[in-house]
Length: 357
Image (tube, rainbow, N blue to C red):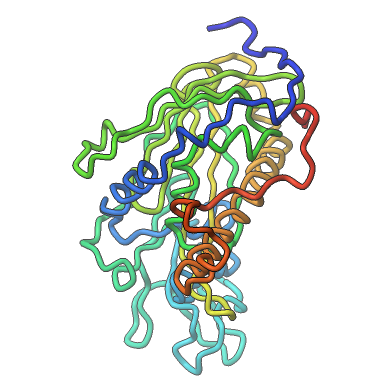
């Protein structure tokens, strides 16, 4: 283990980075996404952080299905339709007493057990996230539990961030299958990024070989932490980045995509739920655990900042597809321009050097 994992980053103009557009083959990303989408999910969907669901009703929507989740006095999870079986009131506005969810309109109580007019859905708490199984929506062979990526052992600190965008779940997963954009689009977080290997465009590639391997330096102002990370997709709505070499080896960032359904404008909406699970064998890491309530807001802030930008790009891709579908793009693209490609929006101003925070 290195005694000092940090390095001082040299000042460099953002525009002087090595361009990565020649390595970012759209067909390669599409092939990796297709393999991911063909893997089983067991009909499980992430709805939130485990800490979000308490003895107060927690509302979630999956592909238009409104759900209510809560814990009883023993901490056991319950989930089911949010519509009151009596007259349709929103059970998310109710209260939990003695483990029962009470409707505020007429006092109907749900125990979490099945009844003739209301059926619970399978729910799973993996220690960081809460999942629900919706067989009618998933349409696959159900599994007893979600298909989870491996996570680091103890000690660890986890933080969960969630944001909503006007895009499809696969747009969120495809975004993470494009590591080449990291240092260009997120220069405040990443530097010296190099994709060491990418999976071939083979539809039958074994899952254990289906990964992107990336060398990247994480920013902490002018200080950087170089690591090597792998990107894999264990199921259609999950993409995992795992540090395989360097400081924090074993730490993971799980990106989960949950469809919400169409918004008021008729366009798809999805929630990206990102779980950052940090681990280190350094003695100082264990000493930081009592201060996790101070550390985790910074972890969530960093995840939100990244996804605020990436969701704008995912929404841009939705618009590009709409233009392609109705032929609008052809009015502006000269015949000699070649195939149309979605290009990330250019920053309003070009930084003179890599941002320091």
